[in-house]
Image 1 (spheres, helix red, strand yellow):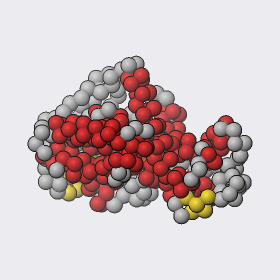
Image 2 (spheres, each protein chain N blue to C red):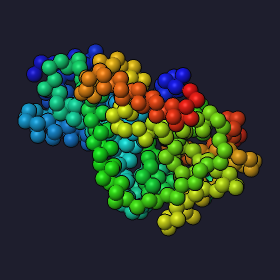
Image 3 (spheres, chains in turn yellow, purple):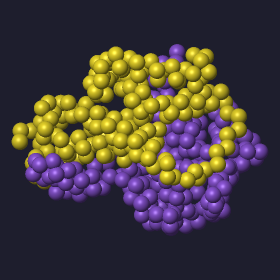
Length: 178
Length: 205
């Protein structure tokens, strides 16, 4: 297998032990971004790490099939989004069988700033998975509508719609003041 | 305006330090996947273990119903408030939270302050009820609004740390901080006035 250049690094994943260091480099170079994206999608540090690792394994598993290895980061990002979707589905099923453990009590008065962030954050986590992914790709990853559409596997118009609805939901969460 | 707020929020959620350590277990899985995918290529023969992520998962699975586990920091000498690092770790595991890890980056005062102000992914998510014991997160509580523990029979006495008040008795936020990279200080508490963001005090175990 020909060595590939990914993120400025020479990678030959087909090679034997010598490749291990490069694999590690690949991990170090790309996983932090994947974890951060996963955090935005899941709102959980633990889940994000698990999810990003799973996505990395999937992405690397398909490494040989990549026509353009420069695209590995994009492929990894897509794997994160897909893993997040699968996680959301599993959550729905698991939620039907899990007893409610906590009795929620609202915290005492917080500063307006913290309260607003809390409201926004909760709103983000209640968005449908695709809306949240669209917001994350557009506003966190700063991708264009076309790039977002490619990762989500939909049309640009759909991305516009997803983002618009997501933003509207977040606005509503803030009481429509912003 | 709202878009700017969303951008800020997403950046905040993603901003906490990330530990990305190459490790053996995942690489073994990657190798198996490659073989399963039909390439027949063995990627690596080295074993590395992921740091926090897999570690936390392993610990959670190992704990099952929350029995004590040999996680990092466990079994340490009793520290202030008679809570041992092991108890914290156990509590974390019991509630499915991230356990202390020797891979955790050192904790700076700025980072701790950020945590206490709720500007981390863990707290802005709003997913923790007040009083939840969390590492790298925050408790919001007052004497009038004590920690709301589950009524489902969760034993809380072991985790007295969660019901500590800010030392001056004023309303504040109490953060439980784990800093295993600074032994023997395995954890500490920070107290920050949630209204003003003022750093009240710091205590270390």
